[in-house]
Image 1: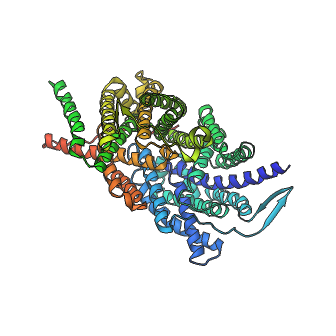
Image 2: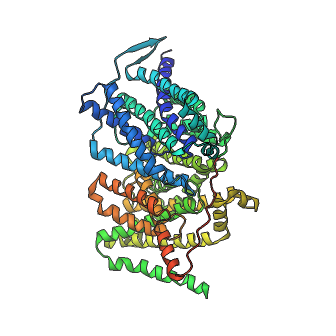
Image 3: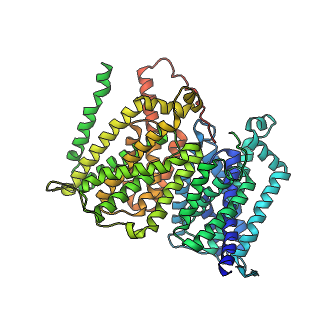
Length: 291
Length: 332
């Protein structure tokens, strides 16, 4: 019984974190048709910015996070202008964007090292609330993650479904040329998408930074898990991403509990390879959208 | 006649490779020369899949690491002749490439990038998980040095290692040049630029990609083995982000899809990285900026610039025709 409650809590926490990361990646993938390798590094940078606003600015943790999201939005605009749009139209542009975002990862990581130094930091917990349901305990940042992640991603789904900008995003996803014929300017939508994705990553970074530590390399592992989520849920589908995130969270929680911390990633990645071989369009999707 | 002209460069290339360590005798310069050859081999072998075949292959760094670990384990745990470890490491990387190739069977474009990147990261977890064999996070230390007869390759400013590396570089350059001019190389370009047309003309994508994948992996494995002997230690750094970005910057600076570009890229990036050795995180900043600037202003790298200069020198009057945009927007 004890094992199950541990597994349930960590499934919900991990699933929430991976969902915040993977939702942004999916959104960028489905609208811009490129892959953002720098997502983990952006998450790390957001966590550091939150820490600075908290530590140097003396702001409460929630306000610091909001400030970091705003600051990261500015970085997001620069990111789109410098790293994505110069390459996206060229032949073989998806590989160029992939390499450019890898270079951005390097830039952000060494930048963080120069700005904040090599010693690791930690954010305080987001509140001290504690909830116990049937033996499963969640408190502080864990509880916030469990609640906030589905809330934010649900909000994103709602925005995509109901608002004007959401409509244009979906129009671009479905048919870029036709959307442009209708007078939709892709660039503005791209900037919106990148900023939203980076905002979600910043929240994930701050949450992870309060549950574990902040270091320049902290984004690597969550990014890899987000890859696996995309493979499982099918990149480009938000519903698939949500389901995939919790499925990977569950798989990781179970394998960590029974096989230990060093075997869990191996099993998770093996699952990903098998899924990619058997059903490359993602387990949870039925139809493949052509590019 | 054309045959003579196109092969006349090789003796010159070989002479330059032999003469370099005689000109630069300082131990540090010698070390840089060795690094040129190792990175040159690696960048060229990676360029086979990444540049010529257009496969988003990020497993190359994994093959390099697997080669290094194969040598580390063989040389410290078995009494095998160290020289045999070089080909065996190439072979073990080749076997690993069969596993890494599985996702390429059914995936395209960016998905291959994800799966192969994950493959490389998986290697780290496997190495850490098998600590009894691989030393875990401590790595493997005390790998015996190579020696030829009584001569240690480390003697005289590691000159033996330089000649071994130079021989490998020369062999790989010939290999890449021959491969890219062969029907295999042509079919790879055809598959990269228009897969549907190429397959309709009877080119088997899986077969051709598998061949080039295995060749690239075997070369990377041998380079990994070379690296293990050179340093005497192996750690999980060989799978790391550092090598990945360094090699990518070499390939893209030199020119992806060019035979000789990556060698030039390897030389330039090694020099830049050496100059900034004491600059800490600034070194990575500069290399990352270098990648970005090259991508912004010269997406075909130095080879592309050299090519356009040569073309305009040879035929000054008619402007070079605009290359037709290729349509390689294949995704799943």
